[in-house]
Image (tube, rainbow, N blue to C red; front, top):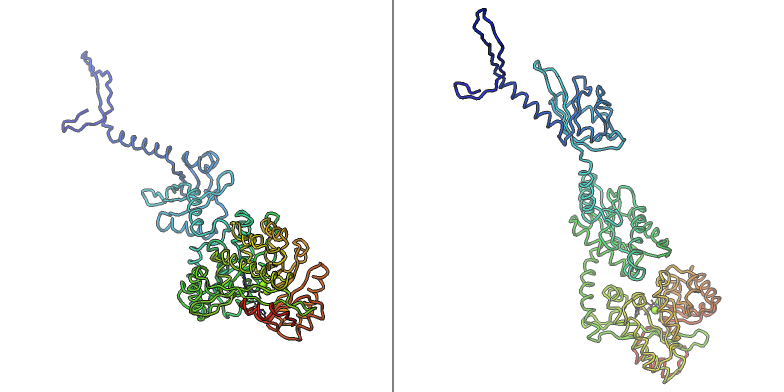
Length: 598
Ligand code: C2E
Ligand code: MG
Ligand code: MG
């Protein structure tokens, strides 16, 4: 109806016959304005639709907190129908994820503020835990007493999982599950805060696997990956729970050792770690041997700048690599200088080959039974334009790291082959030259690494004129390619010597397996002949002879050492007692053009 004032109203109207006692028929019409009631009904309708169709679960309890209503979304989420839970207390949904205090705090909030907002782990009917983001509000009656509690919530389990996944991806290494570089920085900063509070120190231990690239190249990436996982377990297993082990990428790991009272504690930890890594790794039926080079810097002793602290650990790690690997070194200020020098040297190394700055020296190897110089070892020297003569200890590792070892090694071997051909033709048809081969050369997949062997043919030099010196490590991780290359030597009659024998993982098994000709006893044992070196040398000689190998003693510096070695039956000796490495002309005039017996 439209009222006189123009407002539209909704009315309920009825007309009934009505008698007033006369003959005149009459009707009574009454009209009721129901506009407000209609509006309220509509609101109820809307509220009910929202309640029924909401994606959010809604649960209503009375003032005793007994359930009186739950919407369909609640049933979908929880698995409970209203009939099963009516009259019950919502604590039947509890999971074991929160303690008593959590619920006490929640109810205190509800009582004090009339509302609680938060995340709760509950259980579905099937027992599964799920995370709710929930609002609980209190509804009061007109006199202010609690009338209802209304809880509304949504299921955020999946969202939470995703957030966690993203967080994990940002902070952890996918392969090893160790913290990554990101997390490492966070933890380091955290440790610094603690160190200040406790007045303690932090050691940063940078760990780089030795020759991992070779293992990766030869066994393939899947073995390499598995190995990294195993290595990461051994590293974290060697540390305390409070230490953080992180993987920075590739084969580089870092450990934060916080709350240190004295730096000397780190020695023990590093020692133990190196020891633990030495045990072979069993990966896909391969027994793989790895070692690591460790660099250590200490906060705040070395520096308080975290970036510099890391750089220092890196420099110390390089010292470990350069001094023979499988060891740890601490940062010292002198390292800073050395690191700069090394960087300079690396770039100079690149041009040195083209500039012809390398020269091959020869050191005599004496037959201990006759005293004749029977062989020579080719030892490379670098004539540095400003620094003068540089020894291989300073640049071979750099050449290996930069890949320069392949062309350098090739050049050395070609020169040596030409030289021995010349000496055999002119003076001694049995003479041999021993050539050091870096493991990088023998493991190299690229063609070219062993091309120098063609020179044997080209120059008509017999294979047996050459001995190649390899290290024990190469045989331990021997893969088909190594076998194949050693087979190439064997095919043309080139002999094989194990250099620095006794310093690596000496194993009898590979001596048999690989058909070796010589063992070169490392000079550290010869230098210690007055101590335990004597027994060791004797044992090596006896064992080698039993297996049909000859023995060369390195680093013989005194006549006494020579005699002791001679008496135990050692076949050959090499050392400053006879001569250091010499330029080819000097070697020629001292040992070849005269028939020298020394
Ligand atoms: P190595 O093969 O074990 O060579 C023996 C090293 O001991 C040589 O050092 C030699 O000069 C030194 N030496 C010889 N007699 C004595 C002695 O009586 N006392 C002492 N204290 N030392 C002695 P050098 O020439 O500095 O070479 C060091 C290492 O560098 C070699 O050890 C070898 O592993 C590597 N190297 C040398 N030349 C080459 C090369 O052409 N290619 C490759 N890949 N490595 C090389
Ligand atoms: Mg050698
Ligand atoms: Mg040696």
